[in-house]
Length: 231
Image 1: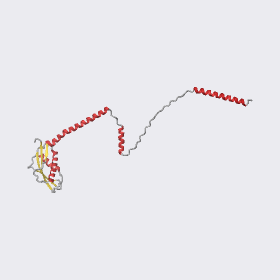
Image 2: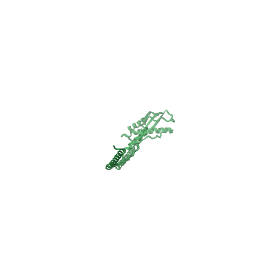
Image 3: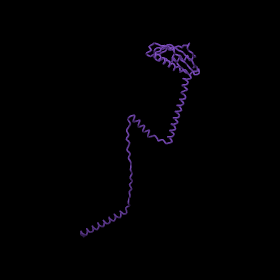
């Protein structure tokens, strides 16, 4: 039988052999194992803060939001586009100035027709004996209104030089009660006579009498003078 010392000896030798074998095997395995190299890629990200938008609640805020959106879609004009735009604006200004100049050239012709070629005046008659300033002012208002109305009939081939005398009565509200032509003083054709009557009738009602003219009615005498250049 194997004694205890011999058994311990064999066990010790067995452990030593196993330790040597494991050590050699480990060293050999480490030498044969391929080296693995790892590459690490570092990427940097920039985080932009989110825009905080609030809902527009008032009409002013809604209008501002619309303007901002429109401005974002506006493209920058190139140099050529900007040149063409300026050229168009210059041509537009030239056209406008031509229109203004044309209007200025035509305006004197219109005024010349009504004020120079054919003129109408309703002067204050020297026979007027009333010197009350209120009456004279009221009389002037009536004569100007008749004159303006008579200008509607100048564009007619029967418009000739002449003078029509009329007399008419107004009530204190400015309404015509009677009107007639003074034939012995009138020097005009039938067309001018009709113009004189129509100018007075169509100017009615005239303004009411001023408070200082405390009359139920007043009689007015007027002379409408029709003039044509060269005659």
